[in-house]
Amino acid sequence: MVGDVAPMIVLLALTGAPLASPAATRTLGFGVAGFLTTIVPACVLVAFRRKYLWVVWASVTGFALIAVGLAGGPSAGILPAIVVMFSLAAGTSIKRVWPAAVAAIIAQVVVILAVRRGGFLDGQTYVMTAWTGVALFAGATMRNRREVLAAAHERARLAEATREEEAQRRVTEERLRIARDLHDVVAHHVSAINVQAGVAAHLIRRDPDGAAEALGHIREASRTVLREIPTLLGLLRTGDEALQTAPTPGLAAVGRLIDSMRHNGLAVTYRHVGGPVDALPPRVDVTAYRVIQEALTNAARHGSGPCEVRVTLAANRFGIEVRNPAPAGAMVSPGRHGLVGMRERVVAVGGALEAGPHDRGGGRAEWVVAATIPLSLSPEGGNE
Image (tube, rainbow, N blue to C red; front, side, top):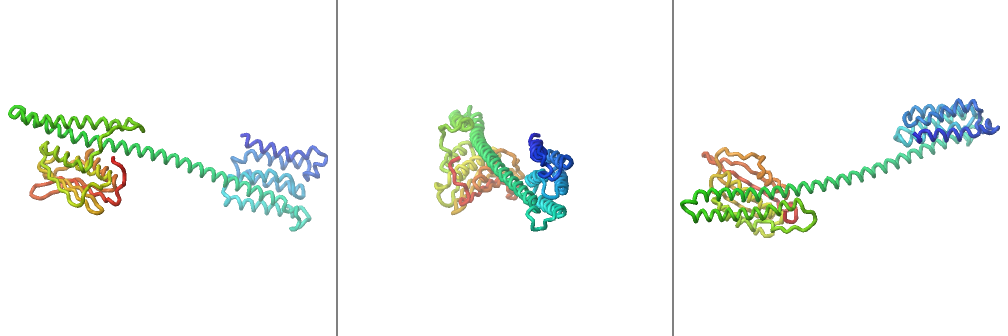
């Protein structure tokens, strides 16, 4: 409100000051009557320029031309029009303002030429047009500065929002990774415990030694779960402090994994084709282990026969294929956490995974999990 009224008061003071002198008529070019009918209405309109910018500009310019006509030449009545022209240029696109400025300048020149005897070469003819041009360029400069500042603030806001989104994305990815690890550990070992518990219950009367061996496997599997779960849950609670963790398993531990599955009663055949796997990127290494672990766990739960694991390492590609017999038409819901977790792991290192039943004919079907990772595109990172 103050920003609207203050220019009006200043303009009234500047244009009305000459009225205190007996020479007011010579200074303004007209007397009190002309001041009240032209300058005062124009100054009052200036207070409404923010809300009715174009209407105020047209009205104030009209009063300025009337003042010029009454004064017989350049007059202080042009001051309100200069202020409004500045506001117009500062608040409107220059493409829309410059035609209005040109029209005002032409009108000023025409009126001055009509009321004065000086011609086109008379300097007084262009006094008001020069001030109009100054107001135009000053307003345009102000507008450009505001746009530059607004763009800088917007870039800063977007940069801050991007940093927050990136931090949130990393937190979400880390929690998903921990959830996948937790699922893999729990699903695998609880499945083993379930199988061995069934074996122990079956053998406890007629083969106590076999039952004791099964209970030993249960003890070992439960010990592994109790050792790994606190580590994974601790990652959710720790910040930057160091956390003692066991080495993340990789393909070097596949032998122990397969032995544990065989102890649980699943017949597993393992084949390795191609070069050694020692030089695999760490993230690919742990991803391969977790995919094989989850596939074998699913085979033990849902399969109906021996399982075949095939690992292929070529120059630029690493492949995993796990096959096991399944009833014809068998289908596992794609919403299962295990399959979703496997796919997320493989996609995270730039690969692709397919899992589903394959009909072998004759009422026979097998469940196949096949993952392919292009080694040239897989991210080079630390162990997950």
